[in-house]
Length: 322
Image (cartoon, rainbow, N blue to C red):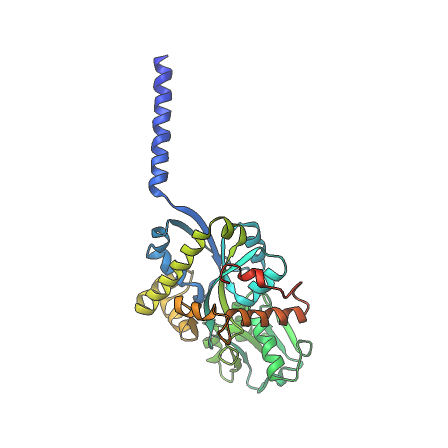
């Protein structure tokens, strides 16, 4: 009997120690996903500097390159937060993804571009030529917007090759496999270094087409709004740190990705505008001429007209910020 009691006491003590250790840790497990892109990388600053831990969060950041899986991952709750371009976020929501907008992260101001060979002088010269891009990425919206506003062509006039990702599109151009491609940094700068290669149009010409945003699974947002607020605060702190400590920030941002250097990140940042607390406050003001709501409604209307969205009613998408 005494032997049995000793075993029971030992088990209770072990359980108490485990409980104490867990409560001492006191962190809530949260997951976030995004692809390899500098626009999302301030999240690595938040992780490295302990902002998430200070907010009581054990943040698991997953780098997932296959953007075609995002809608399912955010809807099923396999990831809690997702960072990706705004127009795919709009399309995902309009087609049934249970996501809610949290904040704007950045906008491309020249970090993305349509690069072509020397004999293609204008967008109209793309007729009958082969162009590579990733249709699952924001580059597709950028491409179609540029075509509609800067040429007499439609997508049907061009041999569009849908690639696995934007990096692959850039590499296809640099290998000579295609006549043109839409790409981002660092492939954009590398491609432009090729003799005769030039940018027909960049995201600086259409600055509202390639914006990145953070969304959250709607169930988590409803049950734990404090977690959403904490993650947003961590982002704002990270952007502030990046602005105040650019060299250290580039190193921290690069460290989160494979085969990305601080120099790569610094080059990317030249073509990006990051949105901190003040910028998001302006974007979230409906009175602002080009608020996030107006920009996003344009995206929803565009994709609805193209038959890519089941609805252009995106009011619920902004439930957390309206």
